[in-house]
Length: 197
Image (cartoon, rainbow, N blue to C red; front, side):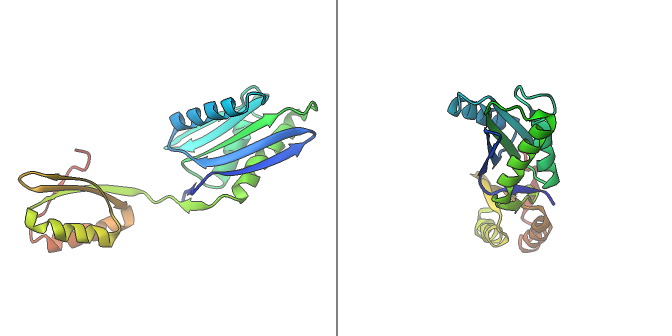
């Protein structure tokens, strides 16, 4: 089961006078990750490198930001994969201390920085959400709302017209049970709709 993080976590390493400031944090995708990298570069204008790795929404990315190819972004990405993370970005800001670490030293430094940050991070399971939509007569709106609340569903949208249209999301494992309960209690007056419309 993939995991995400409940909040960002950081760790700092100093190796041969170079500072490695690692951060692991939840992100929704590449656009958010790139915006975060821009923020880090603005916050650390004297840093030699801002390397990062991303696993989110089926996308992966690794950026060495000027470090020798494959010594920063790729090892960071492998740490994220090893921890079975999804929707997570790892970044490391490096302040060069004047002593070259060599390719192996860089791989170890970036790997260790991210791994240490993950030790303090709270992992949360990622449960796939099902989005559903239905229409009911006004007389059944209260019943449907109560069932949604009992199931822990998130109400995304309600439209009142000739009937009430409700769009909601809940963890996939509970969706089948909720659909059955609503079908039984809806007395044939509940209609399922395409959740994307």
